[in-house]
Image (tube, rainbow, N blue to C red; front, side, top):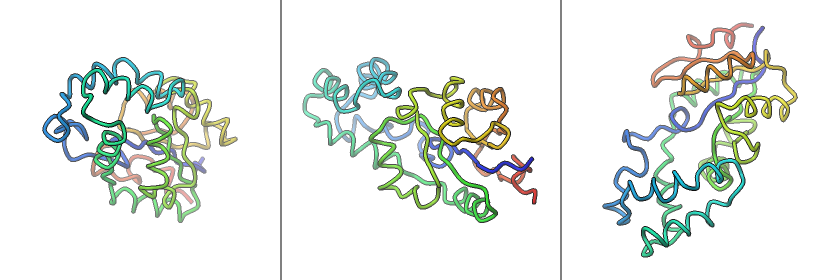
Length: 202
């Protein structure tokens, strides 16, 4: 069966930072925030609540910054983060446009909190390339939890066999396969035709 919808991961797939450490690689030189301190005081302590919609990004980030970098404003760090984590894979977007032109709807299926999700959709313009976006804080579940995939099915009213999916995490791909989705591991330079031949079927 040809899928009627293709779910696409964001970070590591549609958005790929050229530095292996990502947007925070040079944050100590640029903002004076030790990268390890940001990981410990913010991401390790607060990210799970934020990403599942249980806490607001700014509330928890302001708390962390008061502890590790009181000289940095919350807006300043968010701007640095969102603007630095915005490298679109134009070659993939071109492949996706061809899939969409053939009648397959395109959706983002991603682990994001509300503010960056809005930034990706509106400011980065992914709304021009995709039909919808499904993200963790909105759904109350994150990949690779089965609840994430079920929530996407419920939100789209699509059966598992109608959905294809690409992600750069093997765990996320395996969880999608377990739900009955057609899924493949995305690597830079791959082609959708090779990964998911079903998308090319008439």
